[in-house]
Image 1 (cartoon, rainbow, N blue to C red):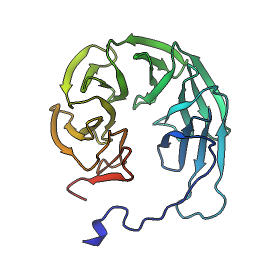
Image 2 (cartoon, rainbow, N blue to C red):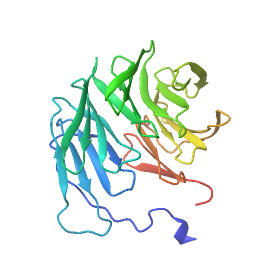
Image 3 (cartoon, rainbow, N blue to C red):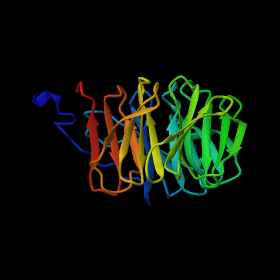
Image 4 (spheres, rainbow, N blue to C red):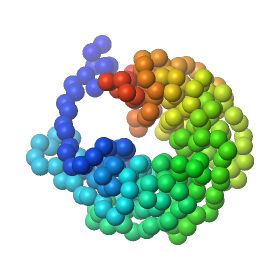
Length: 264
């Protein structure tokens, strides 16, 4: 029975580098590097060795003039990363050199960013509830859409045919892609929906809300199949592991809730 407990043999290590709060962390597509984005206007790349105990190698990504609020790795390239900042720019970086390779100036303070699973497009959301889609090859906007409701987090499904927005109205808006036509409005929670994550196998997605609940949805039926109730504060961030069997969710509670698929 014991061997089925996730993270049973837990070893923790601290990585110090940022001077202010960290707002975003993300692993690259092969799990060898961890990136962090901070209010100190920088991002950092940490080279993680599973059993290493020596000095940790890290590279600082400098150039933004405001908080780095979210970052995401290219899903097809282990050394390319995109950052979104309150300075109204989005930047692409090479994690090996720490150099910025592309930069786009957008219209507002950027707060979220996500890659399309094929690595060709990047979606960016700003504080004015405007969505911009960039083509990574030329790093130019190809779509802009302003919404008349609060847009929080954004995500594509694994095939790239659907685009999800979590809203301040407690709904998840489902759009077709690339047309961005509305497909569905899911009445997901009784308070604002803050975050969303897509199961990498393509079966489910999860939504975290200000009502402190996490809801799990069947992506083919667009039906809620269960809710998780461990957290007592608004759910701010949520993530599947690479197999889709574990869901981590966090709030201002002093713990991270990890829920396991029934096969764990």
